[in-house]
Amino acid sequence: MEAFRKAPETSTNYAVEEDGWRGIVPTILFAIVGVTLLAVLSYRPSDAMQGVGMVFPFTMTEQEILEQVGEAGGRVARFGGFGRMAVVVRDDGGVPEAEDFGALFAMSPLITSACFDAGSAKNAF
Image (cartoon, rainbow, N blue to C red; front, side, top):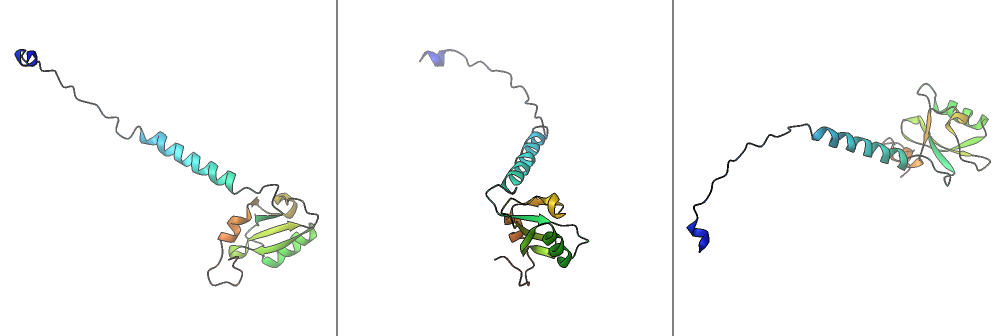
């Protein structure tokens, strides 16, 4: 009962200053970098892949892509969406490089199979 004998002491409540949006900026940057790294590391072609998805210049037609890939020693396994994406396989069994076939860049064929025209017969699914 000694606790009730003393008069309660009041303490001063200080106002808490909030940082506002300052803490959200590093969080957003961390999320963007994480998602970018995940996409780059997940969708890059690996050595175990025989076919590699490639994006060709938008000025090329499907026929020109077929001819260019054939001349470079490869073949088109299938076209992805919009006719500018193709899964390319080398005839010698090696991993295709984008520079060898005149493509803009190479990626995992998972992306080219996900990008398709809804009403087209070229769908990978």
